[in-house]
Length: 491
Image (cartoon, one colour):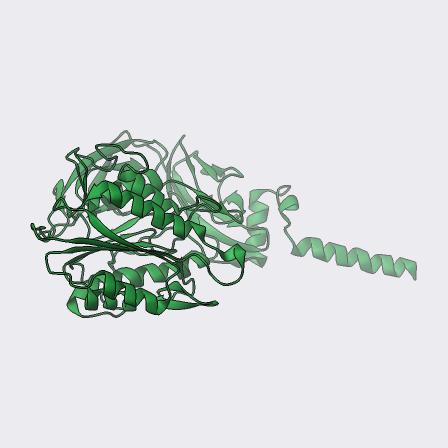
């Protein structure tokens, strides 16, 4: 009986060894054997995503990346080899496939072509090297590699995405006034590259001009005491109000007058409406009004701010907030939003930016889009989900983070949100710096674009880590390329 049991167990073990390719045992087999087993028993999937080039020159190396832990196998090791880290080396001219498997019978293929000659030089052809922020916003660049028999495949990069972005096909899109270097790099492992400088000129609508009777008012709101206990207390939002108030004491409005500041910590839904109505009562078409709020953003993606409402919270849709500002405020309105997913300052459905975040960021991102759509549309009397194309208005918006992003801050005593910290730092506060760091042309005045560019420069590449993940946030502004003067420094 024991011999029979032993025989059955031996048969089961042999069958299992034929049906599995564990990562450890796969390494003991040749690539040819593993690929044959995958073709016979594996499941080809689109869930394994590969990024990198489909070309490599003979004798050169390229690196491929996968979105998960994988094993790499060459379909023809006489043409190309691949390391366990995805480093591909071209050996002989020809085309084959790399097989990429995740150790659980799922795999995908990646076509790779080895060129006999490496790229020796790259040349870029530009139909124009001058764009503007309104009428002529795009140009498609063409790259050509020499010799002609080499791979004609390139990666594109912009030196300053706040001025212009570039797509994988070489399409350049203007974002704001300035100069930017666009680089095309051969993707065959030769590392040969070429660059061209694109100049973006401002060509927005005429900016409103302040007059001698212009009045400046500011309403600063910080939502602090959220329900759920002390762990949900957001002292950083109160810290933001203190920072903004201190900064406004140091600056003038464009007409050389000071701001009259109203502050409120913990404002309910209805209180916010009342505060807007009372703070900006009697505004004229020539006046400038600043509205700032620091709060949580609704991660459900409804496009709401979260307001304090006694022992609970109430959502404040951006469309409602925009309609209140439209109803009670005349003249120019500066809107500064500090919350998760606060706003894609340029809402253009054809140019959705990707921040590389996860599901939580994606939910907060829909809040951002709703914010900018609402403020872009409010002058037209239209507030709905399809008005992103209405880009010109009397509203000038700075938002803490773009869609698909969270906004970050410091906790504890003296805390504040990093976006607000970067903003007041750009204006030389705390302390006093003249000219302000954001004043790029040193004329004592800071425009919307100058302040946006400063915050982008200091903040875009700052990582924030939580639960083993790394996040970034990117300030946004509306309108693109606006030279509207936000603040004037004290003499």
